[in-house]
Length: 566
Image (cartoon, rainbow, N blue to C red; front, side, top):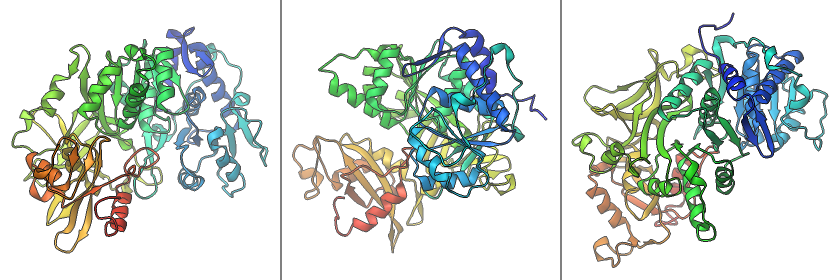
């Protein structure tokens, strides 16, 4: 039975084959494919998968860096009604095996970066894994079995005129995308064709993606952000520039070489690009940023300082931010940060970040913009406060976690998905994010959300980053502690109080930060009792998310030995 009343992500192939028939659709190194060549490659691969016996509902795991072939596999798997399950190429073999045992794929597709997974799994008793495939023909690899395939040998000669009827997996599932859980093992999120399509349409409407875009894939295709923006670009028929993975130097080179007009970032990516340009600006002027028209940032907020720096290297780019999660097929809300037409911070964003007049006598937090047109949000609280859990529902929401039945998903409440975030909605419909429910600190009977405190600390000109954790305390239950990274030109001096310091513009201490928190009207119970100078990078997951549990563990292990720094 087909899901004819729903969308299918392979519907984009019709537009690509006609609108970009003789124009480049994918560029990967020296390999270029026109719309005609790309569509014929996808259809040829789909025919090959059908011939070897891949069927509706079968799961195909893909572990590889970004490439044009990766895009072809995502679409070809969906075309035959199977389900793609992208795995993170940065995972260890043990992490990959856990994920594979969750989704039980019939096929594993890898590139050279993950080829050892395939070789090890061939010696492992996994009865469900019938085929191993390589994106490229890797002659240097030897197999112990005869069921190893390659993309080009799988493909069957095909013409656009010979398009097959695409099929749907049961329940219209298109994708199993793993969360990057900061604790515990990652979960496979079940995402439908319709969810991917409505998310794409939202990005097209709000960000302004169109057929003239030249889109650089900076985010990995194993992450929902990279998949959803890539899918939006496939739907409009844009040109895709693919690099194996993000590195500031290679990304900037690609932007300049291919006149890239659109890309997505996370704060670390933007900081790396800004830093790289700053280091090399004196040697050689860089003009590539003049072609960039749209940048969508996710995975955390950009500071005003970083926004202003980004505007100098991408002077014609509209800069937006998005808030979302894997379980909601990427973005829930959007906000314009910088408007190139006025050569300034967007007025609404400036108002929010400046005088905060719209939130006088209201809860704090970080504004993450307004919901996308297809997104329904609700704040679920106790009725006595504006603050509560952020719930959402709609076609963008996952069906469930892959290895759970719908009735077992505790995240759902009467059709609403609990995002796990705490926040509120102001009078203008903008969402304010306070923190994660599972990161909440219980101090003296009061709830403290680390993200709210961190946002205040980062407003100090000497603080480059901050992580707030709760430490066990006999009186308060948990004590608020702040780990501080300071900017390069600043000095840490905890031996004297703030008002005695000379050159306060370059020195920091616990007392100075304490005063800073008070001046920003942070409630007394939220102000950290301990400030720790953190001299090394904060621990992150493979997808760049903070390992707050690991920060807490390290603080507890070292605090007595190194009371003022780590």
